Length: 377
Ligand code: ADP
Ligand code: MG
Image 1 (cartoon, rainbow, N blue to C red):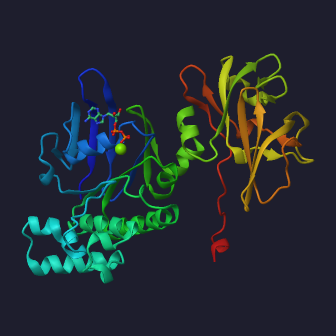
Image 2 (image 1 turned 60 degrees about the vertical axis):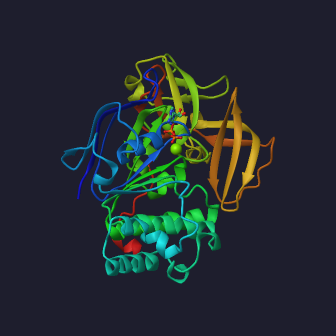
Image 3 (image 1 turned 90 degrees about the vertical axis):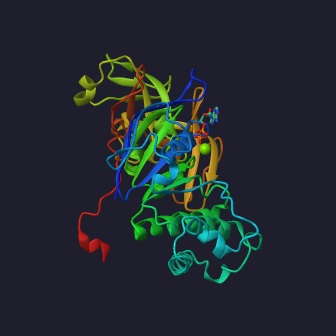
């Protein structure tokens, strides 16, 4: 199996503006790699360059040990599924799935075998004789998927393949796609603008903004330790709360506004050389103050909005111009205008340098670990 290696890749369409720049990443064989970012950030362009459908302006693309910049698409041993998966309306499902094999002059009985297997894997066996118009959106999407699978290309590229489906089907297809990728041991490069898809599907994800890599890593690492405020707000819902704060060295406090100043433990003061930081905290890390809460970490806030979602409650309060969200498990009877006593702990904060935007202090709240195996059985 071959890795896909991008070194210093750049792209411009008009020779003036770089749509992509400094793209350096290696996608490992068998990996489910997700490329995520807002609309227009260059995801499709990057995927199409890997596929050979778009010229590479600068840098080197390698597939395995071979430089692939000039390699024609059909020599790259990859398959591709687009958002608008075009099926041939006059062909049956079976013929649509087998279309590429037919073009490649694969023997009839081999074609049959692969189509039967793929149809079974995707629950399309009963629909092989139908025409695409007699299928639901989800079924059509699966036909497009089956077509990629029967090609048996070791590398599969997908560009927002689920975005035309309704929420329930999308959730179902997420896990189905992941299962198929594992079963076939494919290398998957998957483009989406949806951070939930990225978080749930990717072995690793790459976050792109305005043509530049923001961060590459395992989903949970990125969630816990976002390298800059863009990533912090892009991954996670509600977003990480952010606020520019002043570090008042003489009082050892990070001042968010006139009411809220968070005390910096004396052991941490040397790690804060500057006067300005962007403070970040995940909504679930703003907890309810209890009797154990240090007095200096307790703050009264006035609720400005509430959403009770059944299993969790989200409310917000304002910090000057910005609204901060708080997420608590379970159902809480909170109304707009209520005063709530919260705990804000320095340990839970992420701090970003206010000039470079780099993460300078990680949050210490990183989830739970099962200590003993017996807990699992
Ligand atoms: P994404 O898939 O992340 O939404 P795209 O890769 O499609 O973004 O586009 C990235 C940028 O490149 C956008 O600003 C888009 O307008 C521009 N772009 C895409 N295709 C072309 C093209 N063929 N000619 C000129 N500009 C293009
Ligand atoms: Mg796109």
